[in-house]
Image (cartoon, rainbow, N blue to C red; front, side):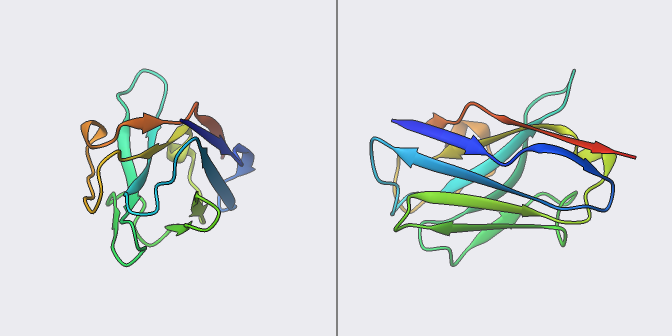
Length: 124
């Protein structure tokens, strides 16, 4: 199983980026997917999660109203649309997929598969 994240880059404050994470090796159509991030010197933190159908989403307070998570089960892909980016959003962003079905979690321990990370840098 492999998760491949892409879409990171350098953007000015107030700008937007869209991250994508494609899965291969198994389908996750009945499993939750999430995005986490880790800034230098800090622990990995929850950003957003989406349940298997896309009908339920969870967001960290710090990104609520600015970020949107979505998924396309036909493409086995999850997205993170990031708008109104701030310098404090600078981090390596990781996608994750749950090996279980019909659950959703904001915890790193709730996910079994992880992508390699994509760097997002927001300049002021």
